[in-house]
Image (tube, rainbow, N blue to C red):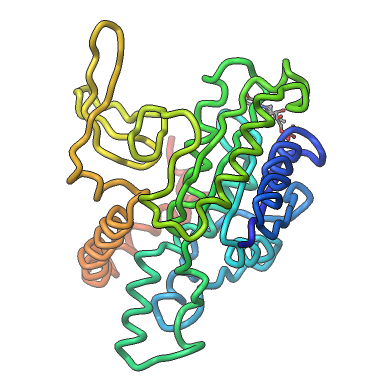
Length: 323
Ligand SMILES: Cc1cc2nc3c(=O)[nH]c(=O)nc-3n(C[C@H](O)[C@H](O)[C@H](O)COP(=O)(O)O)c2cc1C
């Protein structure tokens, strides 16, 4: 088993790096081949939303971001890996910009439901070998997250783990566990915290022990959290007791009794959670339905749209006319 550890945006040899390397030491001891990568000196540009990666995928070509930088180096390493342990610093409440950039460029293109459907089309058309999508897109992968924040209160790191979760979602990787390592400023270094270092080592070991298992047989390592599926703690409120997990989308019913909040869910609703394969397909079909409505609308209104966009295209001139 190959386990990749990534310090996604943290400084060299500081907290993220020490924690993820501790997990790698344990992963190696548990029998894995390990590799470490530090991204902070790398150039991982942002997604431009051009859609070429998904267009190529859905038209018989390869999934490929056309903007060449260090993104491709990380993408290759992740596709080769069977397990990935990612540590990211909390910057401005969420994950690092580098990690967010990576997720934006990787996520849509590597969506498992879309990749499976495209491969099916190709197989039905008699395509074989290199004409099919890269088999690495379909392998089971086991991931773990370590979020590292400086502030002493968890609300300053509230979107760290929830924004990291998207890393493994679209490729349908199994999350083996996670650590919300906030409060590092006071601690100075995780090396002063034996319990935290032991948690990191445990995560590395558990990623290796999960290898090859069916996802439903993988035991969760980390705080139970609020969401019974992804263990997230950020809830999307809408004014009623019917809420959603903000990280995975699972519909939940909220119960408050004696100051204690609990959540329950219908098993049938798990098909709406992004951490299930059904959830990925639910989104796939939503996008297909969207195309059925949007494409004819664009074709039927091509001239009208061009005409009405002119004001915005000529913004510099048009804005002068506003008194
Ligand atoms: C620009 C910037 C923004 C930060 N924002 C937060 C924050 O919102 N919450 C928090 O807990 N820590 C925040 N921190 C502190 C880092 O998360 C913390 O120093 C962490 O240990 C950095 O990872 P490293 O030690 O591996 O480099 C911020 C640090 C920087 C540089």
